[in-house]
Length: 171
Image (cartoon, rainbow, N blue to C red; front, top):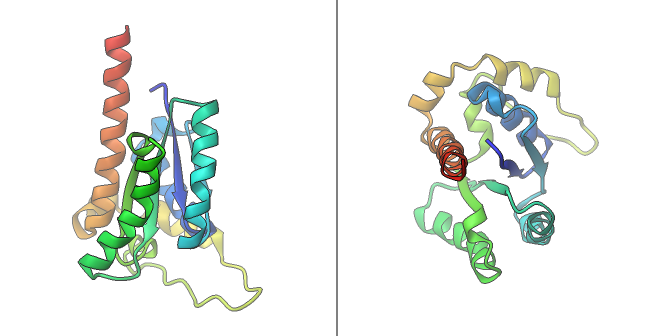
């Protein structure tokens, strides 16, 4: 696979979870992806500048934007997705980006095996434990029990297959 993937997530906890699970889902991607914590929803609007700059430098990059919906309301989720997609369409970047809304949040991928504490000001998360938990989760069960993770895994596989097809056609 020639292209690289940039996973855009909300925070450093999501970064640890995504990196750990992606390395397990597609071991051949190790070293071929980056995970960038962008902050809350407001931070994603600033991320478009980063996407534009990266695409100018590296036109073979693709972006998977994972964002917590913090809701199960279909209309609110659609509104959030449009909030992200509209600027990408306006700047001609939509084909480079896949949006993965996580309902209600990415921590649900841990299947209740680790509950993140409510973070107090200055408190640090136990990233080592989070990584261990994400490293032990049965991916087959996770795909069966969590539709969001299943969609994320399918989007990732689809991207990899597209890249493989482009490479085969070019050869």
